Image 1 (cartoon, rainbow, N blue to C red):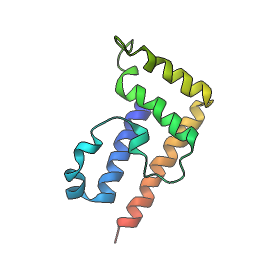
Image 2: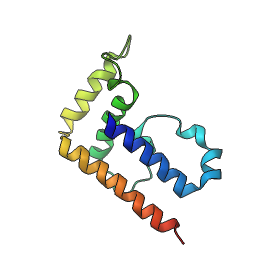
Image 3: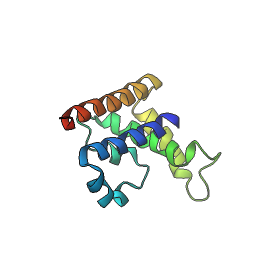
Length: 115
């Protein structure tokens, strides 16, 4: 959950740096969600496994890390976490490696916009 939170904040910060504050504010409603896969769509080199990892991690950001059950009618979301992680063989090491790659990308973005 905490990795997901930090990635969400990092991705939104990268968007602000890339676009600038006025442009980000103009389209802020597009980014008012917790879907890490959508937020990371601009990060180059993400694989299908990376996208699956971000999709599974998004569940923890939205509800799985906060509540003991997914709530009425949302059981399929709980099953999706296991399907994604088992189907793509996602390990904790790979999760942290992906997080590090995305966060390192912020350095590239900062270098691009710095005079």
